[in-house]
Each structure stands twice: as C-alpha cells, then as structure tokens.
Length: 400
Image (cartoon, rainbow, N blue to C red; front, top):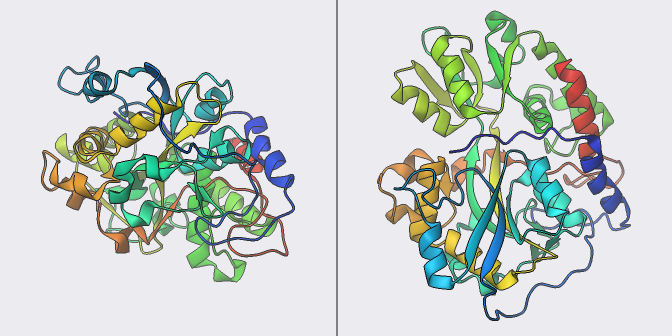
C-alpha cells in the first residue's frame, strides 16, 4: 500500500533542476504541457526490438506487486510470463530517492510523481516517450495527457499511471461546523491547537499558496507552484504560523489513520484511501474537496535515458496501464486509474465513482504536484519564480 510520498533530500537535488533550467534561454511556453524550460535534446525510441529478459524498476510501494507481500495481489508474474521480462523492483519511499536512484543509470523506468518528474526531464535522466509504442495509451483519460508535469513543449515524457487529490479530512465529533475551506487548518487552526495535521514535504508549501490564491487575491498568485519571492514568503509565513498548531506532520498514511483513531489529530490534509481506511475502522471522519480546490498528485511512468532494457520497459508501461492491471493497481493502492477502460474491471464497481476517475470537473479543481522551477509556469516572463531547492530549504525552517 501507499506508504510515503514525502520529499526530504538535500537542496542539492533541487539545485539540479535549477541548474538545468537556468541553462536555457527559452522562457516561452506556459500552457499545460507547453514547458517553461528547454530540456536536453534526447530522442524517443522509434520502434520496439526484442525484449532483453529483464527490467529494473523504481516504484512506489504497491505499484509492482508480485505476490510476495500478498499472494492474492500479483500482476507482475503474468507480465513476466507473457513478455519474458523479469521484473526487478526497487521500492522508493520518497520522490527525492527516486531522483537519486535514476541518476545512477541502473534503472530502466520509474513511477515518478509531479514533484520529481520535471527534475528528471531537466537533468536529462528521463527520455521522451513514444506513446505510439504504448497501445493502451489511447485509452488514458485526456485530462492526464500532455500536462506540465509529464510533458514539455508538446513532447511526452511518460505514461500516466493514476491520480489523487489531497483532501481536507476532519473528525465529525470534534470539528464543528463541518469545514468547507482550508481556512480551518490555516487561519482558524488555533481552534484545534496541537491536533492539526499536515503533509510532511516541501511541496506542501503549495497548499498554503493555493489557500492564499483565493483568500488574498492581492498577492496575484495564479499557480501554487509558480511563486515569486513575495508570494513565496507569504506562503512560508502562513505555514510558520500554522506550525504552532500542528501536532504532527505525516508522510506514512497508516500513521495518519492511527492519529485520527487515537484523537491526536482531528483535522488536516488527507487522501481518499486514508479516509476509506479510517472509516472502515469506525473512526468518525469525513473529507471534502474545499471551496479553494486542492493540490494533488499524478504519477507517471518515465523511462531512463540510460535504460539498458528499454524494450522491456516499454512493455511494462503498456502493461501497467492496461485496463485489468490498471484497475488492480488502483484498487490496491487507493487512487483513480488512468485508463478509462479500467473502471469496468475493478472488483468494487463503485471504485471509479469514489475516486472520481472520470469526473474531469472534479480534477479541474485539483492542482497537481509540479516541480517548482525558476521560469514561472503561470505565464509571467518578467520575473523569476522560487525554485524547488529554495522550497526544500524553507521547509526545514517552517518545521523548526
């Protein structure tokens, strides 16, 4: 199951993107998928050859199950039988770990979240993907294609795997009235001092920026991942104020379930799978997508520019987004599948409804994690935005 998505590595990893992005003089292109920097010139594979007998993957826990964790959960074995590609999986706990591992050149593909994908593209560690070599790509929801976290200047750098929103969860007995705004964890957090919970990652700064985007329009924030210094400072200041009321910063979702179960936490950022798990354990909680919208994550399978087994990697990318397998992963992991046809394959026929898989109006309210870069992706060309390295540094100061 999903264990950890936090980003905690040193600022040098963020500086990697900064250096790569600053090396480009091109600041044009700001629409989703348009790209706000020029990545290294790498060519996508033109055709598939013979499979190489194995594939080395970096994946989130729960994305490449082979039955060793649960005999009933296995979509790797059939892949190996059908393709002849033995799957070797390195489970990563953080996006920064994934970036670090990809730089070794020992892995063929990675299930990168949006707070890692642009770093991999900018550094030249991820190669463009020829989607024509992935037949199941045609059935991926259009809302996941050609987005700013998986494409640059119209060039695709990966195959969408799934998506989820960062929701506002609250204990119905302790939090009243029922919240419909992030103000409950920011401006009003003192009412629940010591029992507010927040996601433990530098990317959480975007949550504060999203709230300020609506609550303080004078700041001019248009994209929570594109913050100039003034906007960034305002978000950091808000989070430092919130820190006094935060009882726990979480990254392991099971720990958040336990915190809500014990009463140590009563309100804060959550995922749909956390809500489902907590409710199954009779914890009196509900979750909402607040009026300001929310941040969220969309994972992308990316192929290494140094892949030693690229044909097996392409076979894997097509397999993991095939309807039946994509449905299995989505249910086991707790997310919305990327393949529209997967909804007919889920064991729980309400899964796609619960996770809003086909509800694009819902996803239009979600700002998916995107690596902050100096070139502002909100359309501005007359200023510099704060890069990820600075987000990492600021996060350390926020937590104290």
